[in-house]
Image 1 (tube, chains in turn brown, cyan):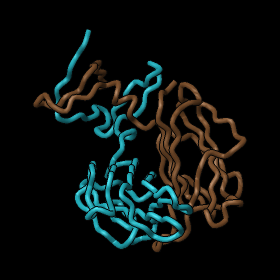
Image 2 (cartoon, chains in turn yellow, purple; image 1 turned 45 degrees about the horizontal axis):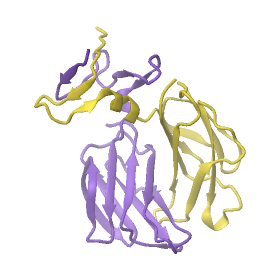
Image 3 (tube, chains in turn purple, red; image 1 turned 90 degrees about the horizontal axis):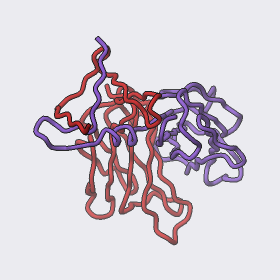
Length: 133
Length: 137
């Protein structure tokens, strides 16, 4: 049977470790996505992700299923290297010239040694924190 | 009316691993379990390799300069989880970054290895912070 619980604060049964439900909602990631960026790009695993687009070398956009309330949400991105020895230094950030929307960010990836050119990297990770619409 | 729920465990009714939480806009819901960070670490590689604080870490291994492997108490469902890493970098250093290593011996459901570089070479740092999201096993 489906059920709904309305509560302001959660504590463990001993009355410790109090957390307001506003922190549960506000502190939870609203989207996360891991993209395999090399070869045929694909989503490896995700949450609240409707789709992604491979825009060519080192450029990817991610679209949320449920939109954020505005465009000022926290967007964190990071790259994983496919080399067990560390390989090259990866740089990932929001792509200049793209206007973030309440659902979509565009990421640009490069290697530090060749930062003038975008490049595909093995793992492209992004997460959103902020308020849902 | 203010309310308080005292409980040690939360479990979904329809699906044990899925509880909906109403979002800040008072309409859209988000999944409680999927939105939670599953593993985070603040770690000092310089001063005797010590945890500043951590959640869901059982141990660490000093793999070498700039490399640390963090082992989890509770495993993730697969090795496709996103991870995010940041660190303290000396003000005069350039060409600095942090990576999660993806090699088979560096990344799994139960552990992951971080890699810190300064001036283009593996370097220990006083503060490395890591967070992994994804699905628990």
